[in-house]
Length: 132
Image 1 (cartoon, rainbow, N blue to C red):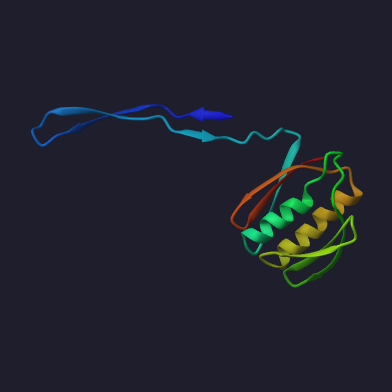
Image 2 (image 1 turned 180 degrees about the vertical axis):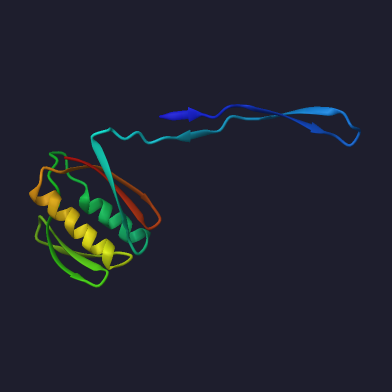
């Protein structure tokens, strides 16, 4: 959804003392709409590469089947995930708290009725939109 801001008219005084009309053009910004049944969970990774890697692993395919099958191990701020093709991948989180939070999230994703709708993020923060 694109929302325009209001157009501002400002008066600026010149050196001679007369008023000049200065118009600022409208600015557009994008608002992400979240369905009331959807929840957003936030994870902090070590850097933007780890954020993109985790986001792609948590997203499902066309049939809403998720790729992550199991959490193998947590070592400090590193979490090792097994995908459905039996390959293991390490993701570096910001700290141990985020790694444990991700383990709990993946457990709910695997064993619960939760489904990841989309992921988005910037820099080292990943937002996962999911619904139950």
